[in-house]
Length: 108
Image (cartoon, rainbow, N blue to C red):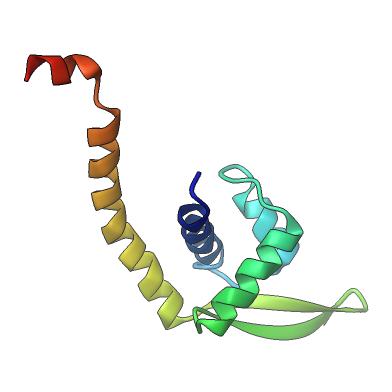
């Protein structure tokens, strides 16, 4: 898969994972696991990028004697999810065109 395309898809997946409630790294990976495999190093790179783009906010709290970062989606992050949904319709049309059966081409 194209690196840039995959990067954009993973960004939106992470935003979706925190859309309903704040979460932390390990929980985000667990929530995404049925849909996509993601390493911790990849996740934290994505989280830093999304934070820099103001698509999420971060707070630190103590949990079990250790500091844990909790991530929440921002209005910019919600906006990105909606933009993705609109873009997805166009992507699906392109996929349908590219994957249509060769026999349809022969009929033309």
